[in-house]
Length: 346
Image 1 (cartoon, rainbow, N blue to C red):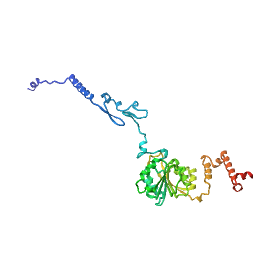
Image 2 (cartoon, rainbow, N blue to C red):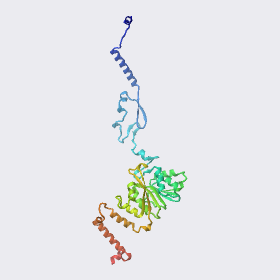
Image 3 (tube, one colour):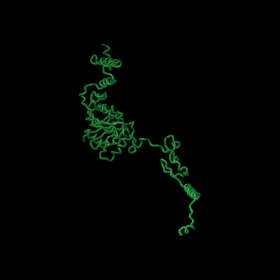
Image 4 (tube, rainbow, N blue to C red):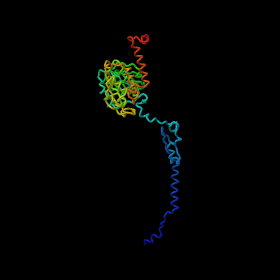
């Protein structure tokens, strides 16, 4: 009975030709839909819809710029012009729209813990007039205004002067800040009790000797320098870092290393670490030498590191220089200092 019932049924299977026709129909339908579709292409400046052919949409070169699509300035050619690439350090070096200039030694101290430590170790009193060199955006200045009676800031960059004025404006300490706009090495310094500064590294050496030559003498200076420069100020005689700078600075002042500051505490970070040094000028009457003559002697002694003092003073150039200076000195001292004319008459 079961076999008889299925004899009349049509049990047909799809042939290979039927399957090929169905597959071809589905592929043709997909291509028709793809003809009406479009793809969004993104540029570096705006999102611009653009109709692409299906062959282009499947081509990765259509979605990524090729060298020919790049302009000579390094930007990507897009609708409306060329999208320029920003400098590598432009975003990191900018702060509130201000571009820091490494040529000016502008490395802003951003760590508030380091700022507080510098002010505390500087021994600032409520009655002190503080001199700050290179205040920058005012991170250290604002802390000094909270502690000292008055702050005198010397700033070379006019942009930083405006930023400092804007930051202090409207605060209770605005009237306690005096800004001198100009080059520290050229301006005339007013009276001050303490100097605290994150020093621009390019003027470290002349800055120290200008401070030590200032009269009346200040109580102390707490300054931040490059690590190696700071260590040269503090090392004792016999150390490999001991040099002309060490001799002259320690002749005129007592130097003490206070703390090391890592380069990541600055914006933008410098290439080397820094250190904070305390400098206390010695009383004038305890330095019984003519500093210019002394510096000339030290310059000769440290002129060639690999030579002994005997070897340096036996060279022909140094011997001629010493002879000329001695003759000039004798001419000025003869006949109770009456001068060269009296020496010639004798």
